[in-house]
Amino acid sequence: MDNKVYIVQCEDYTDSDNKIKSLIDLMGGMGRFAKQGEKIVLKVNLLREARPEAAVCTHPAVAAAVGALVKKEGADAVIADSPGGGYRYNGKTLDKIYRTSGMHRAAQQAKIELNRDTTSRPASYVDGILTKHFDIITPVYEASAVFNLCKMKTHLFTMMTGAVKNIFGVVPGLSKPGYHAKLHDPKRFAGMLLDLAQYISPRLSVMDAIVAMEGNGPGTGDPRQVGLLIGSESPLALDVVAGEIMGIDRKQNSIIMEAEQRGLHPNRIEDIEVIGADLSEVKVPDFKQPRVAPGNFGLDPMPWHQQIIQPFFKNAYTVRPKVIWDRCIACGTCIEGCPMEAISFVNEKAFIEDDKCIRCYCCHELCPEEAIGLHSSWLYQLLKPT
Ligand code: SF4
Ligand code: SF4
Image (cartoon, rainbow, N blue to C red; front, side, top):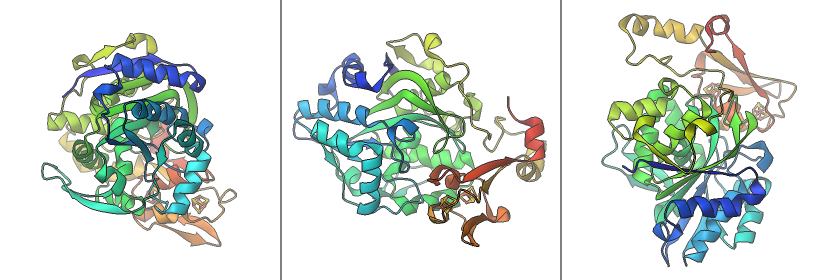
């Protein structure tokens, strides 16, 4: 597995054309990654309908810059993603999200395609440890290669979303909640993500960390200027470096911990060669962390006494999603996206049945009105991570 991660400083999206070129040149040039006649899918993050400045989606300037370099090599580039689990994967949804996110204009400028094919194909991955079968959106299934253009964001369920988590978007819209329903625990969910990342095996990953998202990401956190573009041939290595920059404790990062348990490398910063910047100089020491901690509270392996009290502890030490009724417009996105059918309309507002909720926070990340708040239990308030 490749252990090199490349960093280029970029303060503003107006300069991203030049800086993406610098990054790819540092990695050996686009000729290493795209060949004449190939069809390259630029797998961006289009979680939900949001404007570029909200830092929810990969910035369109980054997609356009990478797409233009692909075109120069004589290959075709197509922007594709299936938005989050509450959104139906159809032409109308894609069109709205492409326009609001700026991808529509970016594709025109770079003279590259926007995917409009909303079919999917079954795929088998015999080497999958937890998951051997996936439903994959057709452009990704048929691509010569996938370029993984992810966004640096915090994530309430997996602590961060970067290169590995971004690949989950190849699973079509309403199929996504099924994975949450089957894999409640963040570590098992991370195992599925690692299987999927290995199956898709992106040829290149580039993280848009020019403006990242901190706090309660990935749908409604706060934009945070970080000023970096990060590239790697290894999504895992990229996430290890991004986690360091964001100040995320690796023991709280379910993807990194699961990778370590599986013996996937590189999963430690000591094993990674960082090129282009001094890591200590680009870390963001006060990057705001998400308000919840994943399942095992950073203890790995979990001691026997905690295994016994964990079911009680998990309910007492928790952050519950709660609908802010004033803001709810009854669009139904959270209902579609909830893997446990825990949400329904009561008096024309969304209502969450707490005993059915598994705290996956899909509703929080998908609500277009930011109408799902987070309510901390008294024990969480007492012991919350600092
Ligand atoms: S809380 Fe209301 S506005 Fe938000 S997704 Fe649910 S139904 Fe839509
Ligand atoms: S109500 Fe609970 S289970 Fe349903 S999406 Fe929200 S956090 Fe997940």
